[in-house]
Image (cartoon, rainbow, N blue to C red; front, side, top):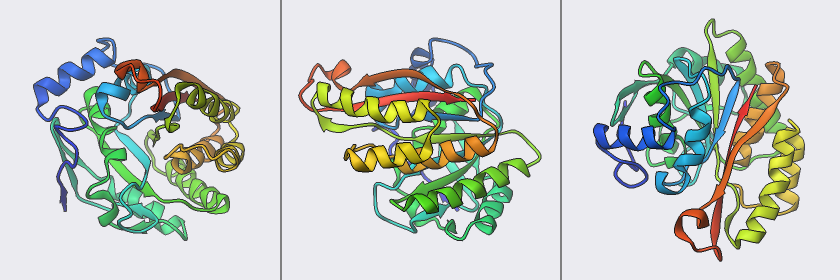
Length: 268
């Protein structure tokens, strides 16, 4: 199956030259990061709003050929824990194949992850990460995982499957968790709520992040993929999460009454 871009020319430039120029600007002109890491957490809004936050992390991280991308399901289509098992993502920088061996291993290793195409067809949260990854790793292959809301215990089970798959992959694999932070609250409210979630991520506390988001009703759309990524990273030996950059849409638009928060992290 060939997945066509869902948000090219909307969330990011749809032509290679314009997209390359945009990403170069948003990553400070670096040609590739050298920092080994287990995971990156990055936002997924239109590049005009969140691109510099995502770019700050991707510019530092060493991007291997194989990346597992986990993002929230905004559309409601498909299965609750959807792995696209094979095929190609057609992107402005070129086609990106699915790492079908890892996709199969993930599905076999979890009672909840399912082979599914429908959840991925129109979902933007994973797609907007791909140009950044391709910019630094032209030979990219991905495993896209689209996730709906689920209990913490299921997050733990999926995290174990992800960690086991990476351990047995026979090659370096990076995880990318895709999330925006608080949605459509004032700058002051967003900063306060986002700080609660950020503190849990920096403390490497996946259950604390999950419970903090639920208890405080933080509209962090990708807290499930971030929780799973944190839990898997711990199983893979991670000991540190660094906040690379935080900003809000108000920093671009000037409207601080209804902002969306964006944060990026490197986990190592």
